[in-house]
Amino acid sequence: MNKKYFSRINLKTLTTFASFILISIFGVLSATAVAIQSNDTIKAYKLLLKADSLTSSAKYDSANFYYELAAESYIKVAKSNSLLSMACTNRSIHCKNKKGWNLAIYQSQPDLAIEFLTIAMKNRGKKGGTVIARTYNNLGVAYTIAGNYNEALNAYFNSLSIYNQVFGQIHKSIADCNNNIGLAYFRKGELKKAVKYINSALLVTERLIGRNNKEYFSTINNLGVIYKAYGDYDKALDCFNSALTIYNNETSNLDKLSLAFIHNNIGTIYLARGDYFKAVQYFEKDLFITLTIIEENHHEVATIYNNIGVAYFDQKNYSKAVVYFSKAYKIRSNIYQKNHPEIAQCLNNLANVYLLDNNLKNAMKYYNKALMIRIATLDKGHPLIANTHANIATAYFKMDSMIMALKHQNISLNYLKKVYGSYHPMVGNDYIKLGDIFENDKNHKVALIKYQEAIRALMNPKYKLNTLYGEVIITEQINSQKYLLEALAKKAEILDKLYEVNN
Image (cartoon, rainbow, N blue to C red):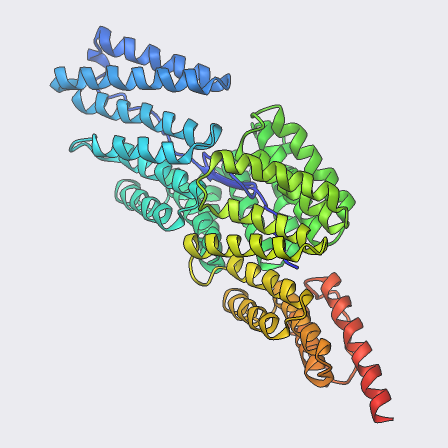
């Protein structure tokens, strides 16, 4: 059965899920025409400073009010003073950027942020340059959180195009755009493109300012998230530990939320490896830190609740699992529209609990709801669509409907092989499930072939396996010990049965 836990990723300057770090770009306000500032510009600047102070104190509604006042004040000056028009228009958009950021990130209202930033773009007149590039980037961040990854990519590429024209290839803003583009591709399930852009961001950042800084921390964390999706847990853990080393350096100047992210992401590695006790320990550290910084009704908190739920689910503690899945679902339902990938994930995980409780009617109901949302919101080849088909196959298997189980399991496998190739733990798990279906129909020979395919998918392809009925040499070059042991055990059972039949 396929569940989904989230790493948290770093969208720049944004922090969202996977402990992904999305990066917002605000930049430094232009000093143009500083020498001829009027009383009105001084007033607007004071309003901006007050808004920044309120944001730092997590008083986001009040901060947004003052950002709006500051933006209106700057526009008033721009209309009345031709010498200050460009500078004040840019400052007005800067204020709107900050309000949009608060709405998207700290207040988990991405749809409002999109509406607000889109209006800001339309009202910019003929003004352009880096301030518009920043707005495109932050609009992309809002779209990413809202689950509209194609629109996010469109906004990010617009931002990157402007920055390339202004700065060339080597600049902090170029790195930030590459980071966010990589994360959007990650969300679309296009992992090769994701790695390409994240690595580009790393190279630019290291060339500009080295490794011991917040920017490198965010991006190496994101690379770890993508390696984990590939099933390369060793490389992922190396990335997360590198990020932790940067955090622990006194000069790195990182906030507590960054530490929370790393605890979450290390927890997801332990979860993937089956060490549930350690996973829960890391998730609870993440939760404790996060709740000292942001309110509970926030998408980051929902992510942590979801991950704790998965850990308890894997321990077969279903009563605790459903408590945490329900908490995640409640938060996400309050934040997002009904057709959002994160809502689908909550429905999927709740369905998993119903399935194991033998409430097959409710399980199928929630799986089908999740599938409809994913088909509507994700690209056709996305691995999460495969995830839902695999779960529906498991439900049909329990209902003893093997034809439908086989249909959905094959759909899942075909999706995953297109995304990950033949060597991946999820591919191996799908082959195991196919083997189970054929074994249930007493088709031992085909089941044996499927279990052997599972073993091939779980071991590094550079290590040759012996013949179908031969011994398999186990090395450390495996991507999932849990699935490999399961496949080997099931292969052994069938070999015993075939031996009895033939003797």
